[in-house]
Length: 468
Image 1 (cartoon, rainbow, N blue to C red):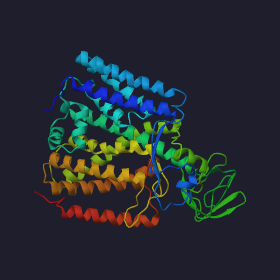
Image 2 (cartoon, helix red, strand yellow):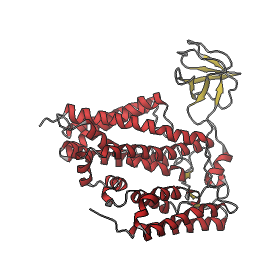
Image 3 (cartoon, rainbow, N blue to C red):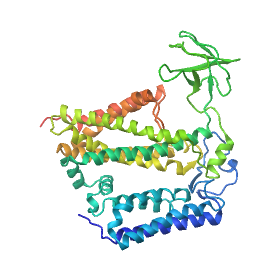
Image 4 (cartoon, helix red, strand yellow):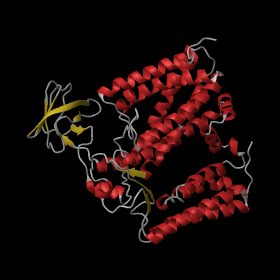
């Protein structure tokens, strides 16, 4: 096992601290965040002349630092926390026993340097990892929680053998689910919030009760609503989706009669797709690097923990039923819980969503450009995290069920397809889960079901249900 020498942690922390200080001083000198873009631009027309329509040429930017929080010498305030990390490094170097006490402080100080770019992101990321390792000093690195995380994402077979054989890993699995949920929740919530600033979604209140069986809804305003727009009417308990076929003076007419009663001044009519474009907000976000933040984004991040736990249980149930009950293999539900938890680790990549913004189609629309799958910045991270998670799940199933890799792939394909279908087409709409979601039109849903059918057939060909 790898055991870090006592002087390695302070050296790593010193390097991270110096990166954070350098990042902060560069921002202080410019009195503005560092914006890295594919080309220099001073106006929205230069990078997105067809806004809000997709642009032929790609333009994107990455920002290091938070606009509004680093100007007028505020950057020196955040640099102070980087100096605190340097002080922690010196303290650990002098007395390694202090590592455990200072570990949590190192993590906190690292997060407080994010307004100045967190040491070009790398510094803060490595410092957080080091802080978690220091908190469990003097354990060997591979035996720490963060060591287990890094072994899981790098697909180390020996780790998954330990994971399936040691029931005490259930605590680490719970922490993994919560930790990943918070990071993914922050990233997706902030990205969707800023996307909603660029594309404000029209919403209006009913001013007259709309009864079931009616084709129309009288509303306080019809601004932003057009023929063909899909809207959501009512609240979560009785909400329904309709398509607008006519927009009149103070009313909206739908293609299908309402199934529920909706109350005036209480129930809302909200558009489901982008129907307006805010050029001023787009300029602030794209050109000035601003990231809008409000309380709802943080609340949604915390709410994502509950959603993550539901996802964890649903995936475990499918893997257990198919891998154990149907195929006849032997393992416990607790073992599959531990394996499934680590499969969600790559979703932490979604944390980096709000650091990059671009013009369309990479912003949200997605471009299929000779590919069957649409491609955009959020979807790239979505695909990468799910493929990575699939690889982790496959290796975990292989070790937990003691099967050949081919069969493990089949079990992961079958259970993963059912899980994805259940979450995205049933539970997500019911839960009204916050953050980034994947939705399909009626026409594309048939193609999705066809693709899942092919995956299920492939899983059977790989020997998923073969009795031994």
